[in-house]
Amino acid sequence: MIIHVTVNGQAYTRETTDYKTLLHFLREDIGLTGTKEGCAAGECGACTVILNGKAVNSCLVLAAEVQGAVIETVEGELKDGKMSVLQDAFVQNHATQCGFCTPGLLMSIRDLLNRNPTPSVHEIKEGIEGNFCRCTGYVQVIEAVLDATGQSEKKKELHHVS
Amino acid sequence: MNRAFQYRAASSYDEALGWLAELGPQGRVLAGGTDLLINIRAGLMRPETVIDIKRIPNIDQLSDSPTEGLVIGAGVTINELLEREEVIQHYPLLTACAEHLASHQVRNRATVVGNIVNASPCADMAPGLLCLDASIEVRSQAGPRTVPAHTFFTGAKQTILKPGELVSRILIPATTRDAQGGYLKLKRIAGHDLGIVGAALLKHGDLIRVAVSSAAPTPVRVRDFSTADSLDTVIAETQAAICPIDDVRCTKEYRLFMVGVFLKRLWQEVVA
Ligand SMILES: Cc1cc2nc3c(=O)[nH]c(=O)nc-3n(C[C@H](O)[C@H](O)[C@H](O)COP(=O)(O)OP(=O)(O)OC[C@H]3O[C@@H](n4cnc5c(N)ncnc54)[C@H](O)[C@@H]3O)c2cc1C
Ligand code: FES
Ligand code: FES
Image 1 (cartoon, rainbow over the protein chains, first blue to last red):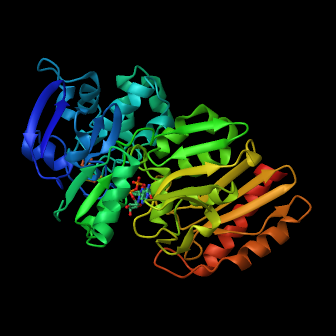
Image 2: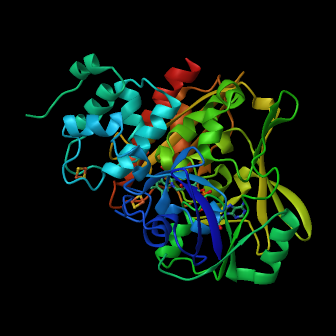
Image 3: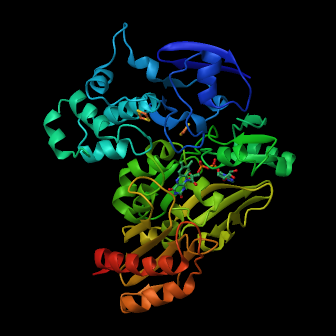
């Protein structure tokens, strides 16, 4: 079937199979490989993209279901060759280690900030509940969000495991 | 996806019902897909065709009135329920259940109707819908019928739905609008997780209703209690009404025990 979508502001038309997931459609048919497949079962959040303004697990959506949709992926964070404030904060806070979870985390946080520009520590934790990170222990990720939202003073609410 | 199937998007109920009749067991309804796509991937379901119902006009109906109560269309997602002011205000037990269901991303796709049609014993919306005495509106080419939620579940992952039928709406009567309620769920972690056991309690005037998840082949509603009943009676009768099992996540004794703990906490929060 033929699918028309807008991804990161650009229109694409691609032929694909009825049973392809949005995740594989983005990676294989459009060539945007930033979005990752961890579990393929909705558990890990590595595949998170923003579909018509809402964060979803792209491994649990069919390309066939997104006909005409507007999608944002991690590649859209880069504007004019520059990383977003959120991405910079990830770098500064060592919120990326192996990096596999990062694209999904960035999309979940982008969705959270669209709904709530200055989330509390608790709200950040809830916002990234659907994203597994096996490296950072999450504290650095929360610190990055606090920095990116001008709330660095709240970092003292967090505990590092030493 | 590891298995091939065809995709069709229905533009009306008539079209979806026609396809369901034509395809028989080879056709399956696709709502949010958060159970269906996982089952297909795991080889537990092997439909030749999935029938997407999300493009049917008005399928995302979510309306409330003091006389008609709450209507939840088959396209309404868990997050749409959680975000709706009328639901937050008048049906606190439903939002308590919805908050416990999966992660934010899953809740953006998962539908309330899909949760009950999937009919897992741990379905988090079920205890709330049972306590609120919801009805399930079912459609087929033969016409519509409405069944009470407490007769909808017939076994683990089994419902009264017959081939060719789909659920169009959930209807919640206005009689328990504004009832207080809460839902507590035991999980392995603080974040999102399937329930190990869960209990819901609703209070409306003198009426007390209790329902339990993950403690029997289906979600269970216990008989109607009243505020004149003691907490001990409510706990004892609830524990007698369920039949939890031992499994990898915990023992049956622990499940029974935690139902008592949850009811005590809910009683303090909602009734006392
Ligand atoms: C990571 C993850 C975590 C989860 N956590 C939880 C949790 O904590 N608690 C919980 O209760 N559930 C959980 N679930 C399960 C799932 O998200 C819910 O059951 C969800 O509500 C299902 O709705 P859906 O719209 O996605 O259903 P679908 O997957 O689209 O459908 C489910 C089943 O119902 C059928 N169906 C759907 N709609 C209709 C209809 N209108 N008429 C007839 N048949 C229909 C489908 O054919 C399918 O068999 C989780 C799932 C995942 C992937
Ligand atoms: S790959 Fe989609 S949630 Fe893990
Ligand atoms: S940085 Fe490795 S999983 Fe998160």
